[in-house]
Figure 1 (cartoon, rainbow, N blue to C red):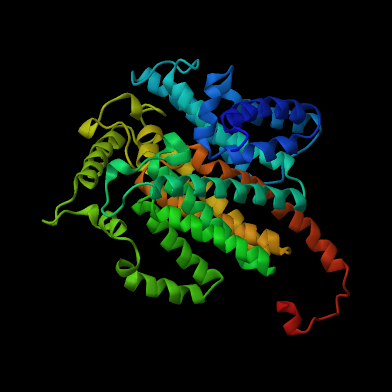
Figure 2 (cartoon, rainbow, N blue to C red):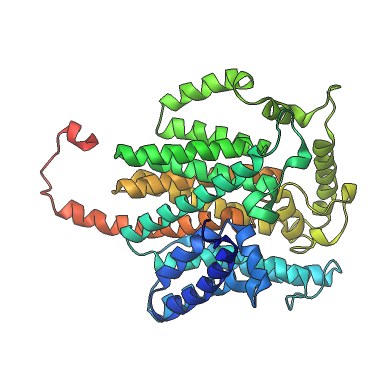
Length: 445
């Protein structure tokens, strides 16, 4: 930047969090949500805040201020069973922390010096973000603004990740060249999961956009996001994009099925050589599993024995990371496996119920929405959650606010949109005579 202000941007953003905390508490909590959205995936920007007082906790502080400010103004949540499921799940996970302590697998979860408590606290930012969005997003304008800010955040992540990826030589695949880019600790696979989820969300949303200028900008963002996903070299993200495109083709854009079929036949001639090498890394030249895949199988075989020792309640939330496992690894490389090992069948029930409820919310909004914006939001959310469900088979892409923060903002917005649509439906029905039947072509206009 010509005025040499780039060095001060993190400090300005840091001060902005304190300003927005005051605004959220005493003026308009919605503005606090608007401010926080672009920072949710941008972990490397937020890491700069750690140099200043309370920098580690600014994101949590602003989210809490949004909720408190909304409650002080008498705002309320739209009716949705997702909130109750999250509440019960959060309480169960905290009790599970104590179970892990009693079994001798972790410390007492009392303070931020206890790693298991910190893990739970960070995870709880996701339902708190859902509550914040559910409270302050109250009308169509707010929903549209949230979507635009999410697109704005995606553009910044696209730019940063592509600049990082394309600055390296990718004539051949090299695992050592991968990193999380702007998502930081979430890693390269987390970055790819965020990009795939976001691309599919806006892909679904654009099916209901009529203005060609908006569609042009939107599809440009999707194209760049898919390019960035490709250069993140995550096989899980590749599968998620293909599955999402297939579902989108079945539900709305049938021509996409033809394009997808052609791509699946010709992809090795289309994508860069490094991508082809990455896809074929599952097995070596002798047909044996490569080291990464073999390591995961070993982890899962070990996890099976741990699950059988305590199938109902597991060994305690956030305890898996505290002990070495197969290959001296501390993660199951499959979120569902980690859930069932740590929290048993009860924890898996809550996790799967959340995924199913979000998908059902997206489906209802897509099928029953009376506003094209709401229908697009519903379809986009359905595809976004589908991508998340798939990528979590290959690692923990669920508990990171960098990956899923915006997803839960969209869930809050979708719950409100469904309530607004249900409120509008009786008004539309009573505004026309019961005997009036619209011509069939007008129903599709």
